[in-house]
Length: 283
Ligand code: C2E
Ligand code: MG
Ligand code: MG
Ligand code: MG
Image 1 (cartoon, protein in one colour):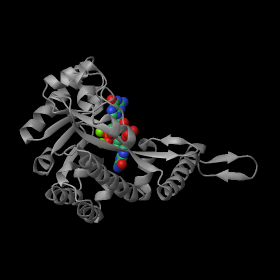
Image 2 (cartoon, helix red, strand yellow):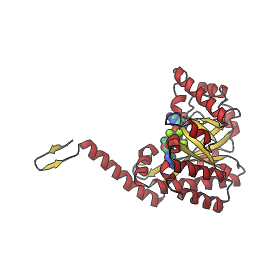
Image 3 (cartoon, helix red, strand yellow):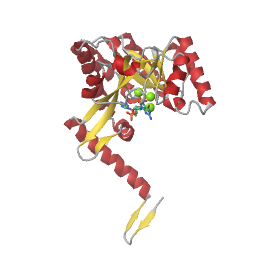
Image 4 (cartoon, helix red, strand yellow):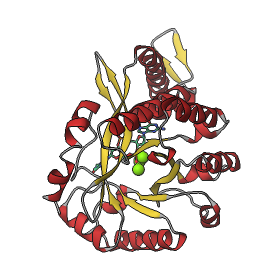
């Protein structure tokens, strides 16, 4: 849409589009700077066993902590990072933080807690990630089974990405399908993929008691996962009612504000040692 602005200026863009471009540029420049200043960091959210309440995994969630703006959520910058290719550096940074945490937990006698990292489809366009993972496993000497990569359904649509994930899985690293049920899934592809876990998207957990359709979808996902031999995690548990329902349906593990919000490393290291006590009360 073209628009006349004052007497001499004439642009082909609406103000909205100018704002979008400006915002994108602002985020991109900020991100580049943030990467060099190391103000991109991981917050960690526990994932608990649905029966015992023990923490079985933690998910790394990217945070950009800007000294002027404060904390920027990934929804605001991951899409821009994907468009600009900066996701490659962010992704490697997050994988390194995950390996460091695995090492740290081992040293503190908390070994065996899986650490999950979100991986964008863009990172699976070439084999850089495979080389990086090989190198990291060597350098950190961590057990690959302690690491889990979370990818979305749409990622599996790419032949190349599926191939890479197969190779990554061969290394012993777990693969989880994130936000399951919200994207496009080829069920035949899913069956032949090397995937270990399905994560039920939190939109289905939301409104569980009011919306019977969500219950039907959740049950269908559980049945599918069971018949494919996959583990099931449900995201976004906020209430005791949701916890109860999902436990009864046989979901393996649970993640949500009801247990813990994503937290910085120092807080996680305080939280984990008495996890047994803290979660037992919730069951
Ligand atoms: P996700 O991987 O599905 O992560 C779960 C999101 O749900 C997180 O949002 C988490 O804070 C939020 N969440 C967890 N429990 C609850 C709950 O009980 N209620 C509600 N309302 N929300 C809950 P977050 O941290 O804002 O991350 C948003 C998305 O950004 C992630 O969704 C993931 O897709 C993406 N993301 C985060 N970190 C990275 C990263 O390092 N790399 C890539 N590629 N994507 C990332
Ligand atoms: Mg995730
Ligand atoms: Mg998710
Ligand atoms: Mg999500």
